[in-house]
Length: 99
Image (cartoon, helix red, strand yellow):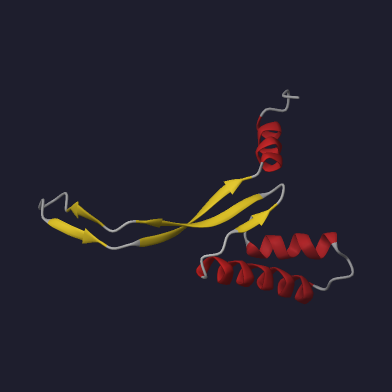
């Protein structure tokens, strides 16, 4: 599912929203989440999961071809940890015979 599929699904499930309204809702949500993560905040959606920013310390690495030392700067990345309800739903979909 991509962003346009999400917008379409939202417009179908909420008939009072036009496609343009659904697009505005999805875009606002994504932009707000991106801004919060860029500011270093954690996002927790109960039952779905949580997004957090993880920092990797600067380090010295090696170029595999030449063996020369290379400085790798501090890196920030987004980490997603699924919630229990999402994990269980995915497990049930993959293994329908599970309780």
